[in-house]
Length: 226
Image (cartoon, rainbow, N blue to C red):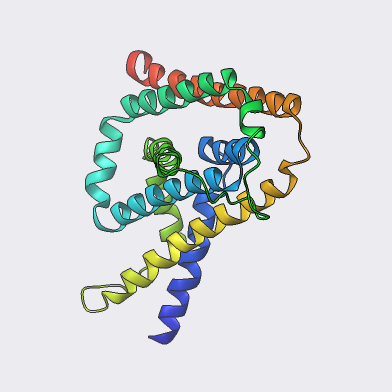
């Protein structure tokens, strides 16, 4: 059983990293906020995404059949809703002024501002959660990873503690990834001026618009053409 626990811890951590690592809308948002506002806003955005990943991992394990049927039934609607959220943020990002965030240099050596208000923390956290949770198709990624690694294959009512170990390891991997990314981006943050940050914002906004348009196109195709 000790070997099973180690197996669960290792694969849980690896899966948490693999789910977070792809540079989708959430990853782009984390990088943008870290560059513009410092490490803490980016980190809390990533933590919100980690909660969403944890939520979908639990659903995958315990409610797989019901959720897959629901996703297939409302696939096009979900693509529209998720794409709309991404498009709205992309528009906000395009219009944003990075100069205002650069004027606030009240950060410690590691980029963690001690004066970030609770409302700001909650806003960053919820936006990361909202954008990530609007993409329930991540469940299929979890299904593939769980099947490939036999993750939690030995867990049962008798060995309930394996569920705790597994899910704790998974969310630790996801959180660890966002710690690493925000730390690395924050290290180069001060090398960028206002104009460079504005170009980065516009580039990221265009990428997010592209992602949103792709989602709208897929949703339209399945709703009205297929």
